[in-house]
Length: 338
Image 1 (tube, rainbow, N blue to C red):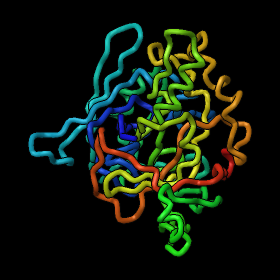
Image 2 (image 1 turned 180 degrees about the vertical axis):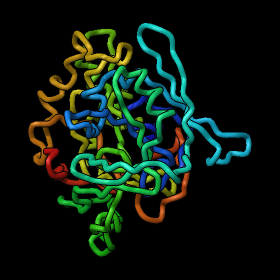
Image 3 (image 1 turned 180 degrees about the horizontal axis):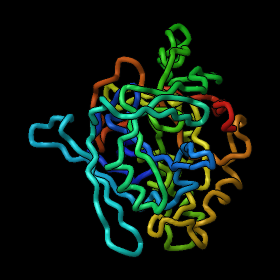
């Protein structure tokens, strides 16, 4: 198998950036999901609350495109995210956001994603007003900065595992399990549940086969970080426990359960019509395979970087080995998301 695609999402829920290579860190690819947008909900007493914006509930977010531009010297402190709003009707417009903002003097925000709280910074009127004019309602752009969110699901294996090489199987039980699987404290950015989401092209082909002839499922609707090509069978990734690419190891600890976001029409920024708008229902017919979320369809695997791999670079075309397999599917256990 090989890596066929790599994606980073500097601003959560906006369109992805496709990369030829990416540096890995404990908290995900560099600059992945360090920003997010929140809708302002005013109240009668003049106070305001903030609502996290996700594609499933705010499909218009898919009409915002991003790219990262570095200066000639490659200094991230002077790099920028170029956000382009391209509505189905009307002219497009752009906004430059510093990739690594200077946070002194910025107001702080309390953000809670899936019961996992953190602090963030309000980027201020220059950015909030531009985005609000695009959405047609008041929003704020939040920057995570040095803050992180706690991981609320277990990162310990709940099933028996075996390696893909028989000569290793005999000694696996005598070796220490990877530290990320021993319950060490893990933290994430504005990613939903883990630093990495890994999916299989072979399984995507199974999804496309459920659509009318001539239609294909768009991989980017599943919001992956790493796309693997060459799995022999669809859904084999349900049993992947660890992937190795070069000297980088990723521990795949949970299935990714899916929502209405995969039914969005990326061309219109609205729920899709026809069979493309029924993809989630199609998957629910036979992909409710996780006992921890038995009413949710599964596509892809949540992953954490094995300690010792941080700072390495992976690239499209790198070979991928399933270096540990689970004998049974894992059980999703993030509280409140089952």
